[in-house]
Length: 360
Image (cartoon, rainbow, N blue to C red; front, side, top):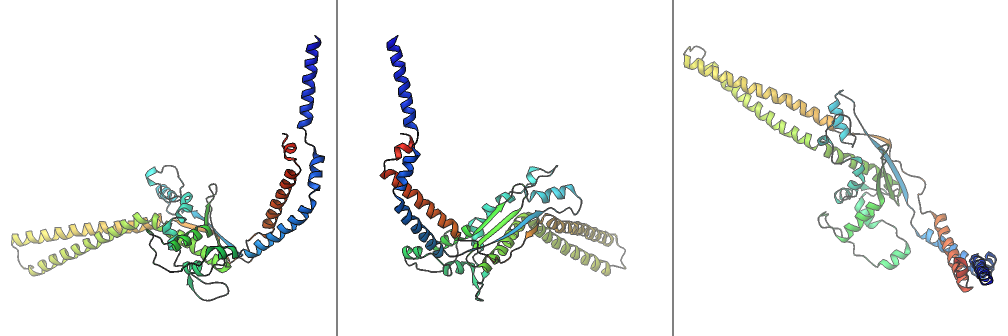
């Protein structure tokens, strides 16, 4: 019995010792950090100075946003027409078939704007800086008029700038860099709940950021409209050709009938009368065909108008006044925080307090 009691007391002592050993001695940690107060006094002000230098070295930039939303037209009162128009914006109404749904919905607009073809279409947009009236393409502006931090200029070396013709199948190194810059500067976001499309353009010049925001909005609307009405416009062109051909055949048949009737007014032969009836029937047939195609042509015009998407602009492009960045206070705080962590880690390592802190 005595041996079992001794073993139990030994286990209790070990548990108590482990509990005391596992507790953190905050007083010892504080004294260890206080011992290195000079390191804090030196490193924290240095971190502030470095953060200020980094902030001042970064070029300022401005941000302009435009907001638009697809508009569903209720004109015409036709459920099928409304469903067809709504399908262009990814909205499925009752009674619409899956085959009527568009392949490009607003959720795919960001991917569309990041495509090589769309970014390449922005190269030729004419812009000018706020403090200059010299017009230039957006490509030339990004290539020649971008301010860089001193460390990028120091370590990047000297680049050979040579403008080449755009070939989206085989981009040059500079064209690839410009497209990456556009992808970073031009951002599209779509709200899944409200359907609001937000286009944000960031640039070092406030006027160019507003100009590009408005231009990107127009290019996006143009592309979506062209895509959405592509089939209807092709049908319209084909109907135009058929209608013109039918009109020529009708006019030719009418002229033949008129000439034959004028030349044989006094003749009463059955062969002449039969020929005249054949020409009249052919003229009537050509007229019916032309009349039917003319009605189809008007319907094709109406179809193009029906499927053309409309956009309501909630927020137009406006030249920003205040800078969007860089966020100087945030950069300084990050450097101060990193310096504090570094000095704290060094002090704990120097005073062998890591094990006590981690409970080892």
